[in-house]
Length: 317
Ligand code: KG4
Image 1 (tube, rainbow, N blue to C red):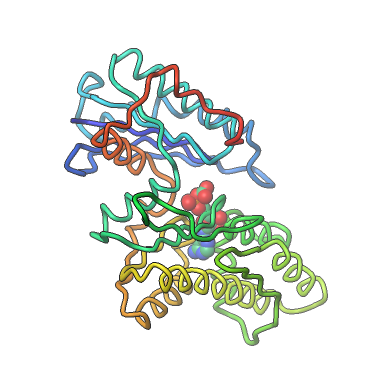
Image 2: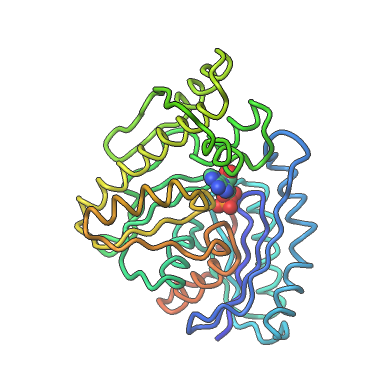
């Protein structure tokens, strides 16, 4: 059984092909790099429309399969940016219709967790999913995935990207902030906002920008921003770990590329006698393979849909 997965929740289009044993046969992606500013939903959708067909061809080539070998189509149903979601859902529906195969719409965030489990061997982790658009602590409990905590405003990646943009660093901002943080001399106190297992980054972002505008060295502000934001992330993950009594922690999403965040989360896991896992970077950020693998899992449990039921609804905007 071969599943093709189509991803397009944010600025990146991804196409992956995975078999029912979990062998990743292809994973191709193409990000939209904005000339300036952030991601505009309409521009992301135009990017998806232009890249999806070439990526499907690339993925077939990489997997050495033909289009007729595809038995199932999966696509990211959300959460994400509405115009891009509708574009990729339309591509998925056309593909399923023309091949006369079943289709399944999957949850993007759970896709990150499941590809993390597939590629690391983690079985039942508390997952910290940190990306440009999402920040969630997720775990499987009482027969379903639950979001134990999440950002109440912007995502951690968005916070780092916006900070970098406003102080004149490039995009994406996370790696730039990390580089400069390594040159810091002093920690500057910034607001720490955790409530239960939820967090907030917008006040922290404003405060960090004010410190920089007030004359504090950029490297010190970058360091302090990272230390404060990552401590918040570690605290909510630790709370979820204590609550669920699980023995595994999985870090995933594009911000997992940050070595300081990895260090902090792994120290916390060790203190709780939990195993720390992180997927290879290729499968940390948005990718089509995670959507294809979710398609396989959902098909296995009878969760496919009728094509007419796969409309992406406005609430995912
Ligand atoms: O999951 P991802 O690839 O895609 C989207 O969410 O669209 O995550 C991208 C995010 C960006 O915000 C980027 O700044 C952040 O991951 N990121 C990092 C690092 N590398 C990428 N954040 C902190 N440190 C890094 N080294």
